[in-house]
Image (cartoon, rainbow, N blue to C red; front, side, top):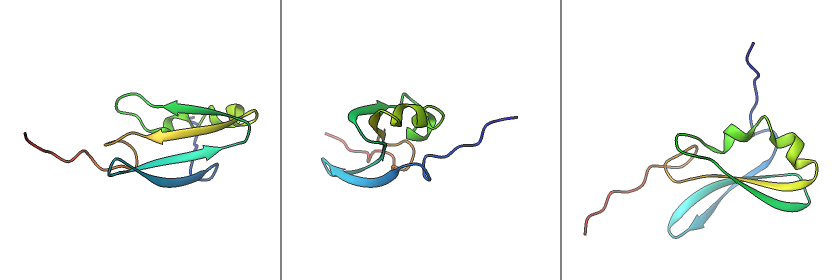
Length: 79
């Protein structure tokens, strides 16, 4: 049986504009900040199973990188 989880009900999510891109992030817990960055083909939601334990002693911040999770793909440009 697979475990069901979601970060949407556990933390506070928001968008922050960074260099013209609206990045999605979530914060969980309190304490010393810890930023979790996903790898390729991932999103911040992949940290769902470990967030409760980390959030007991840290303010955990997950970020969806551009083109992943809740963010749009990068705009194409040419030189």
